[in-house]
Image 1 (tube, rainbow, N blue to C red):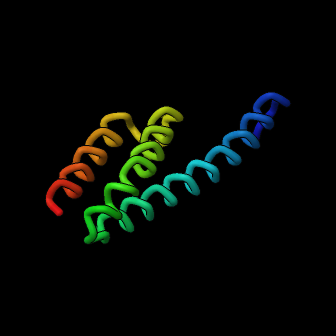
Image 2 (image 1 turned 90 degrees about the horizontal axis):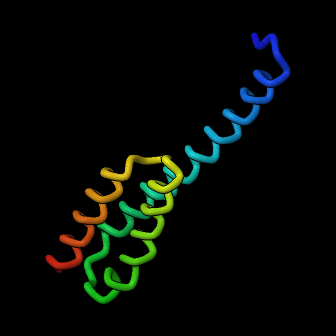
Length: 83
């Protein structure tokens, strides 16, 4: 267990951040799954910017790696083009 006041605070902060990161990462995964299930090209083109911005925000906050965000965006763009 923590011996210092600052260590106790870091533990509290880490737990809050872990839960927030878990929530936003899961939300993004669900958005990507939902996006991949879309079969209408117009609908996919409407959803693409919002999904990409979500991935960019996660990469900026280091919830996911920036290369993972780029790879996902690339694959989603390919999905839109293949419709």
